[in-house]
Amino acid sequence: MKKIITTVSIVALALTLRAQHTEIELVRSAFKLEKKAKVAQFMQLSDSDAKKFWPIYNNYENERSKLGDRKVKLIDQYTKVYTKLDKATAEKLWKESAAIQRSEASLREKYAGIIGKDISPVVAINFYMVEDYIATAVKEELYSSLPTTP
Picture 1 (cartoon, rainbow, N blue to C red):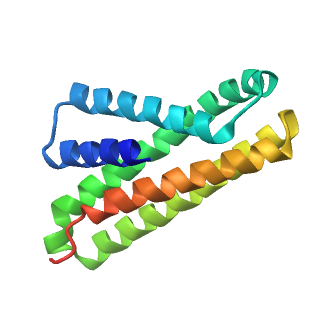
Picture 2 (tube, helix red, strand yellow):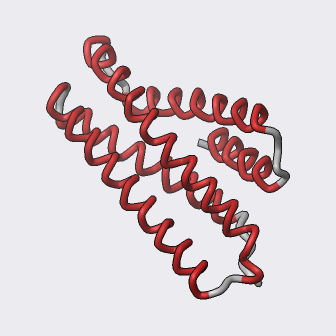
């Protein structure tokens, strides 16, 4: 988990420094590989369950990464304007943050349902819990680097 947090910190730093697009993509790829390894370690899937699980998980990750992009964009927008927030911008930003959080939970629920139906409810709850844990750790790391005093 510490590797994932370190990778997230690097992503946040890259965002802060306005790193080139290719550097961000390299960090994102490293994060996905480390995350997938942690999920595999947590899930402890049988061979037959793994054959069913990983294609579903890859679809989930494709959808989840789009939400991650929205979150990074939101954080970038906030860091650019936090010292001069007006009411309209502040409302726009918190509404987008809330929408992203709802979408993330909804996406985990959607895929837990698919996994529960196609594999088993036990695999589904393990997927949900590990994803929720990782998402919480990533959010904490990203948000801890936000400026808080305008």
